Length: 519
Image (cartoon, rainbow, N blue to C red; front, side, top):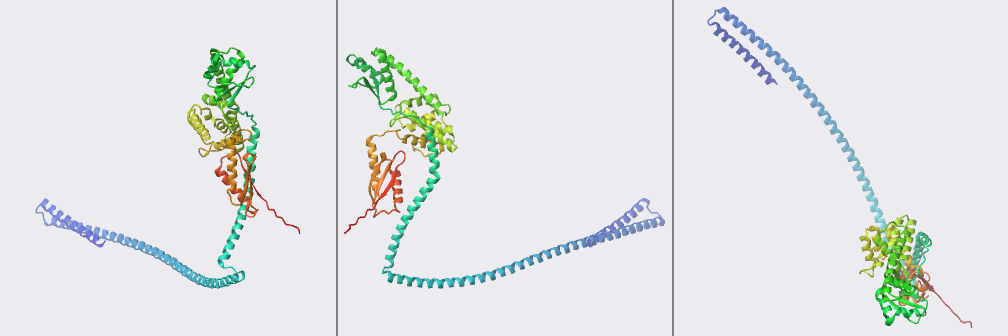
């Protein structure tokens, strides 16, 4: 700042000198050689200008000095304030560090005391363990002397006792779990299924592979046969069935594995008998008439089934297939009536569970639709049913229920589970289906073989048409406490190795007999 002031003063002096010189030169050049009086006036003017310049420079100097002092004072004040603030912050940090150090010191002291206490406790525990080991060893030695058994023998006896106790405990646990499951689920399941079955009381008529046509007299048999068997050959060729004319009075048997074809032939024969005119041309006319009537019946039965099921509109082609199921049987059970029964039961169970009742009914009605196509196309009725359901734009829920109702795929929806359960209920109902004697006997033998494969089982008897098995066990091998466990294991193995409708009850019988002689 001082240098700038000096420079300003020098500049002011130089300016004054310059002004003076310029004034002098100007006066000198203008007037030439004037007199001494004019020169003196110029000198005075120059002095005056110089004095003014000096005065102005002095004022500027004083002003700059004052400003410089004020600025220095302000900067010094700011610096002092900043220093004070920094000093205070350092003091606070130092205080916090001191407090932290004191806390850590106290903490360290506490931990050292705890470590010392723990070390003492560990040492005391080690001493006690040594003492206990010594006592334990002396007791073992004493027990071996008293019992006369080595440690290995005692362990063997203990393990045997524990195994027996474990078997008893497992039996108790099985009984407890069975009771708990029954308490929680049996009531609800019985209520739902019972309600559905009670509300669905459908009549079922068993169909066979033959139909019997009644004749007004035995004389008509000859007319049906015709000259040299012409009429009977025409009937069999046109209808595709086999006529059995034997010694049965006033009856002709119509045989065919195709129930629709058999029904058309039966109806054709009845009309020919009523008309009385039996010849190839008339046979063909009556066949066409009967065929149209059966097709109309099929359509009407399909529409009736859809209406009865109350499951919404269904594609006309699927309706026709439903009508064909009227003439299909499975183990003697009408497939159409079975499908309706499954639809009713599935819908009722869905209503009880709060599921989609209409969807369950629809899936139940269509679950066996593939059985109407078995004779026309290759593939299982499940695969055919899935194919045709998708072809005629049924929902994926219905398609999945059709696909899963025999366990070909895992049930992923509640509707599929309900259809599967309803199908099992309808099929397992007493009187619904028949099975051949060979399969029946084989199932009973397998049931008895599974039961007798367990250790301790003496005999097994399958009763109640294979719906119950009574197992006789050896009393010296199987105790009363072990009987629930054996029953559970037998039932589990039956579930794994056998296929059967409904349920099979396992009864375990243990009998102990003792006798003595009075002397």
